[in-house]
Image 1: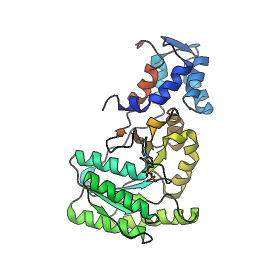
Image 2: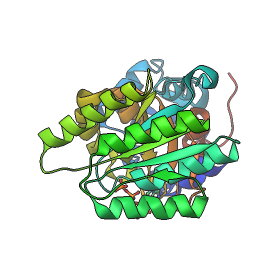
Image 3: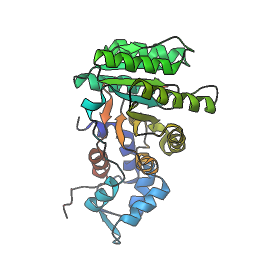
Length: 295
Ligand code: GDP
C-alpha cells in the first residue's frame, strides 16, 4: 500500500510547493513555519514543533522527522481470539464519511479473511439504512437492519448476538450523526454502548470517530465533544484526497491523544489506507527536502 498516503496528500503537498517551490538540503525556521502553516498545522503546534527543534537556525530533515513523528500514537494491536466478535462502533457527524468508511473497513477485513457483519444503527435516517444496505450488497457482507425510527440499540444487540452465534469475527455498527438535538444524540450513543456490553462483555471493543479531513482543524472541537459523550478509542480521517489541510492531522493527533487508524483517500471501497505515520511524515518531508540527510 506504499504510496497511497502520498497520493491522498497530493493537494496538501501542492500547497507546500506553492510556498516552497524548490527542494533543499535544509530550511530555515521561518521557512518551516510558513510551510507548516500553509499545510494547515495550527499556529500553536507549529510553535511547539519549532520549540522542540535544536537551537540552530538551519533545520535538517532528520531532526525535523523525529519531531514530526512524535505527534502520532501507535495503533494498539487487536487480540482477535479473546474478543470475537470484535465490535466496532462507528461515530461521527452526518457527511463525515461514516457509512462509506464502514464499507471500506468491511472490505479490508474481508480481504484479510475475516467474517464481517454490519449493523445499520443509524435508524434516524432511512437514507442511511438504504446506503449501508447497498454497500453490504456491493461488497457482499451480511447486514442487520430495521425500519427507520426503530430502536437503534436493538439493531446493535441483534447484530452482536447473531455474530456470536455464527462465528463472525467483526461487527461494524453505524450510528446516527444527528438527532433532534444534542441531548438525544448523546443519550442514544451512550445507550448503544451500554447495550453492546449487554450483548457481549467488553463490546464495543473500539469506538472509532470518523472525522472529515476537509474540515482541517475545525474538526477538533467536534471530536472533543464526541469524546466527552462516549470516550473515543481511535480516529479515522476521511477525504484526505480532497483537502490541502493534511497538516491538521498533527493538531488532531495532539489534541485528541488518540491513534489514527486509517485515512480515506477516495470514494471507492478500496480507498482506505492504514495510517502509516512514517509514510505520512516522509511524504511531507520529500516535498521540502532535496536529499535524505543521515546525520
Ligand atoms: P456519513 O453521513 O457520515 O455516513 O457519510 P457518507 O459515508 O455518506 O459520506 C459522505 C460523502 O463523502 C459521500 O459522498 C462519500 O462518497 C464521501 N467520502 C467519504 N469518504 C471519502 C474519502 O475518503 N474521500 C472522498 N473524496 N470522499 C469521501
